[in-house]
Length: 122
Image (tube, rainbow, N blue to C red; front, side, top):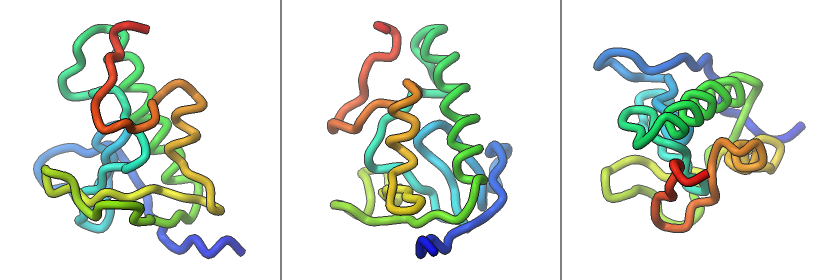
């Protein structure tokens, strides 16, 4: 038993009412709380800077949705609790392993270094 207790059915966020859904590859809503995954940065889905970023953002969004739906997980605070936009900062873990690291290994996210990377120079 892993101790992971959070679970829900996630889909893509649509419309103004957001309770449990995925915004993009590093942001989702869970039970009415907007969460920014603290250990990664994923390409922007809403306003991509180039076609490569748009393609990667779509893939990251789909993959995060699949990962969240794959079973129970834990939301851990590591550092600050919220970002400057008021989003909850959490590391998403399953069995003690970061789901953000899965996205990194698959080339759909980068480790968070305090600033956005450039997805158009890949």
